[in-house]
Every structure is written in structure tokens, then in C-alpha cells.
Image (cartoon, rainbow, N blue to C red):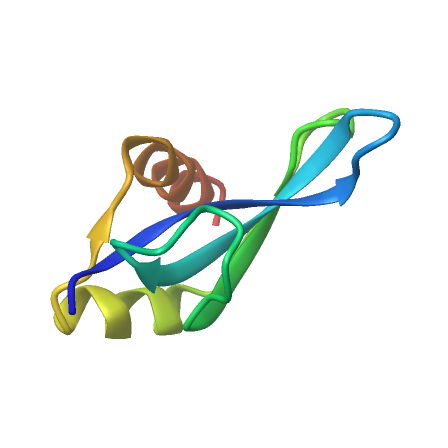
Length: 83
């Protein structure tokens, strides 16, 4: 089973103010299906955008062969610079 680390929509649908979860999920799974592990949060609607990443869990999944999406990769770089 191939695992991807990507964003999953969460939050208010009616107001279209989404926040996102950073999750480990099966590559074949739909975007909104059940995730394997929750790795962090990203909320672009706040000023400045809030970002929280659990780097220990992230490193565990990467060591197991999970691939990050391009967006998550850039967010992780930003979180490492600010830490």
C-alpha cells in the first residue's frame, strides 16, 4: 500500500473558509476518506496563517516510504524554518 502525506479539507463548508489537516493517507483513497494518521494542521484563513506539524510522526511515515505532496513539502519547509 502506497502512502501519501497530503492535505485534507476540514472546517466550514457554507462560508468557504476551509482549514486543512496534514494527514497520512492511502494513495488510492479519495481526498475526504478516512486517514491513517493525523500529522498536523494548516489554517490559511487566519492572519498570519497558522501551521502546526508533528515532525516526529512525519519522520516516522517518511522512513516507512510515504511520499509528501508538493504543497505539504513546502509547508513543512516553512514550519522547519520558523522552528
